Each structure stands twice: as C-alpha cells, then as structure tokens.
Image (cartoon, rainbow, N blue to C red; front, top):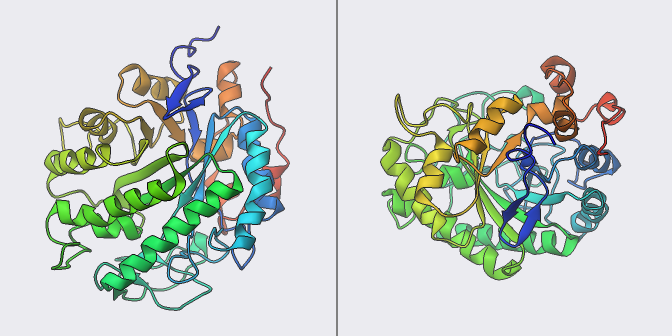
Length: 373
C-alpha cells in the first residue's frame, strides 16, 4: 500500500480501455525522427522508457497527418504515408508490451509551421502571422510567414488527411488518437477569434469556430470505429502567445466543453501553465474543473503537476480523472514507479535536456530506470 493508491495508482477507464494508473505522459516535441518524418530506433527507445517506468499511457509528440501543409517542425514524426505507418508498428508494440497504452497525437501546425519538407507556404483559417519569432529549440529562426486563408475545399482536404492518418494509426496498432486542438496549432486557430476572422460558417460565433473541430471528430470517429480511443487536447494559451485567453471566459468554456462533450470524443485533455490555477480570472474554475462541469467524459489535466501531492489533490477534488506530465517525465521517465516506492524525483534540467535543440539526447536513452516490482 502507498499513500497514493486511491488517487494516482487507482485504475482508470477511458471508453472501454482500462488504464492501470492515473499517470499519463504528455505530448512533447522532440524533433528526432528522420528528415522525411519516419520515426526511428531512437524514437522507439525514447517512448519505451515511459512504459517501462510505469506510466499507464503515453501520448506521442504531435505527429503530422499529411504531406501538404501539416508539418510544423523539421525532423518531426509523421503518420502520413504507408512508410510512416510501418515504422510506428514496432514503437507501438514495445510500449504496449510493458502494459501501457499509446495514443498518437495528430497535429496540423497551420500558421504556426516553422519547418515543412513539402512546402514553404503555411495555411490557416485566415491570413495570420504568429506574434513572435520561430522557436529555436525546434529548429526555427526568424519571423513566421503570413499564412494563406484556407478555402472550403482546402478544409475538406485537411479533414481527409486527418482521417487517413487516424486509419494509419489504427492499422499501426495505436490504442487511440488525440486531435491536437491546443497551443495555437491549426484546430486551435479555427477556435480563436483573434486568428479566425472568416465570415462564413467556420468563423464568427464560438459555435461556428467550433464547426471544423466537431466535423473532424465526427469524420475520424466514423473512420476508426467505436473501440479506438479518440481524444482532443484543448488550451487557451498558445505556443506563440502564452497569455492568450478566451474573451468570453467561463461562458466560452461552457459552449466549447458542452459541444465537445456532446460529440464522439472519449476524453478531453487540457493544457495549461498550471492546472490548479483559475482559468478565467480570479475566483473562477480551473480549465479542468470547467471541462468536468460541462461534460461527462474523462478529463486529463496537464500543467505544473510534477509534485505528486499536487497531482493527487487534483484527482481527490474530482477536478480531473487523469494527470499528464511533460517536463517531469523527461527528467524522470520512471515517475510512477519512483512515486509508488516513495523515491525522490530529479529536477528538470532544461539546459541539459532541451538545449541547444530539443532532440532526444543519448544520455536520456542510457538512464537506469526504476522498474515495477
């Protein structure tokens, strides 16, 4: 018995899938695949470590779903071709053999793309230039270009790309897919009133700006069936604008989360700086509390939950059903096993792990991991 048996180490469910505990690895961009997007043996070893370390599920880095405009970073992993699909198969199998689920996060970078082997252009719901320069640790340099506005035909092509990628994920053996609707990437761009200034059915009201996400959820669910996990990641903050918040506050949250909860998704994954702070101004709910209030699907909280006491308190308060950790998982890929045994956790060393660029370092793959008893 441990002090966290009824919180962090209690079994959980997402749809019909049983997760052995409440610890999940959050998606993290590591730009370590081949130049053509094929994940390699380094990527395989990287993901397997988290499964060995006791996590119940691993959500991959954002994977680009097509060979047009979706890629966001050089050396980003893809799931857009048969070759990509075949390369993911042994990675998926190695994670699953240790008792963990693996979920492919499908990401279209949209206007936030800073490295694409297939094109120099970027696209978005409207012409838009992200407000900061490209991110150096992911290989970027200088200002982002101004994105081109997507036509309705272009929107349909993007949906087809996501659907095909989700089918590839199913064929590769993934337990689920997560649609990346957070952090300023394309799906989030459609949701954001300051980026999406369209005057058709995909712009204007919150309901209209949700339309693309809801249509995509419907199409992906139809393609992969009911047994595959389908989740979505949502945030207010953006990688290129961390201070962004929904102008309608809790009212927007109610509209967004209610619509998502009524769709075909199996969970909502929230991304925030700190999952325990008010999401909409002083005295308001957190993002995960809002998602719990307005939906009946499992909620994954993510943001500054490296301290086990803090993570457990989120579960105790019923503010979320699972906790996802990112930097903590990089510093301690065996976080669950260490916490269960009462061991100390190492601090995250940004300079050592993320600099000069965020690729997977040799020392990470050589760490001695605490294994389950």
